Image 1 (cartoon, rainbow, N blue to C red):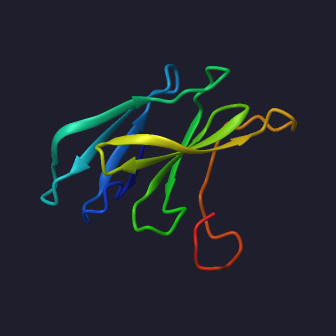
Image 2: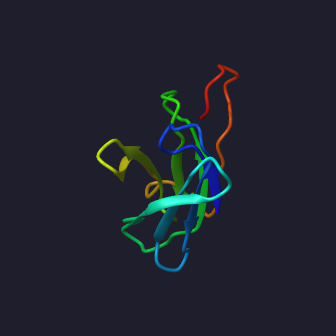
Length: 116
């Protein structure tokens, strides 16, 4: 489970990953300590059916937090779209490396003031 402002409304939202199925459910904060309806849900698509880790960060600097997933042979980034759904916007393919992504983290690795 992670928190972030996915829809850029100033309220904290919550995303939960089912590591068995890749199903993700996002509850959008209402600003009063609760959640508003409807929720958003989607399933991560991977070639190897591995759904291991979740992180959050504003990777593109647009003020909205993106969801980042460790998925074995890839790292995937999903972004909230104004159309009302999450869309996979980036995939880092790890199949030619020996890396098996089990966890993922977001931080300012280059000291440039942005999240990597």
